Amino acid sequence: MVSKVYFSSLHGKKSWLDKTSKLFDRAGFRSIIEPGDIVAIKVHFGEPGNTAYLSPIFVRRIVDKVKKAGGKPFLTDSNTLYVGARSNAVDHLVSAIENGFSYATVGAPIIIADGINGKDYVAVNIEGKHIKEAKI
Image (cartoon, rainbow, N blue to C red):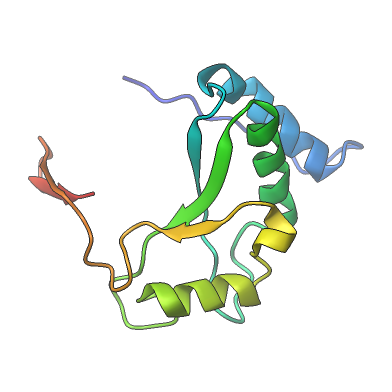
């Protein structure tokens, strides 16, 4: 199965926020969100002092689109395996807030997917060439 990949040029007259909305629409996300669905929006919150993450203003646009479709959005990411500011949920949430991700700015709560210490998972067997088990 081949995945569809959507691209939007950052050049042109349309605002980046409008392009974010258009990508959501083109991908057909509204058609798969039923009223009352709890919808996870996977976000990389970035390390403190880092700028290599999607700005919260764009995430807010997606949150608003999910709400308009009747969904109940929340932001999520998993802790890192390496020691750092995102290796446990407490520090991860602090990092997210320091980088501008809060309910006040994005309009959705944040839930760290793999728990306080990154140990909450279910092992799933997969048919990978090199990996036979994924921790989900």
